[in-house]
Amino acid sequence: MKKSRYSDSQIINILKAAEGGTPVAAICREHDMSNAAFYQCVMAGSTSIFLKQSRRCK
Image 1 (cartoon, rainbow, N blue to C red):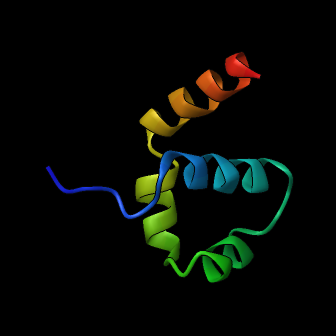
Image 2: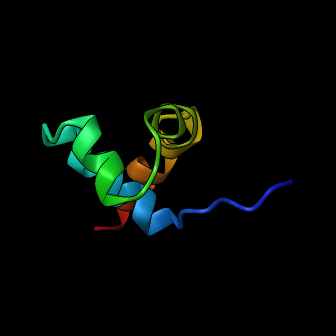
């Protein structure tokens, strides 16, 4: 299986920025990714599990 380009903490930060109302285009520019990569990789169902786990840990 291919290794993800982004670490779990980066994905969590990207999701928090998206939830905070930052435009997707700005997030993609900041992290050097395409819009398609954002929706395919970052918004995949597994990333919501990371976010839920990080909230439980805090």
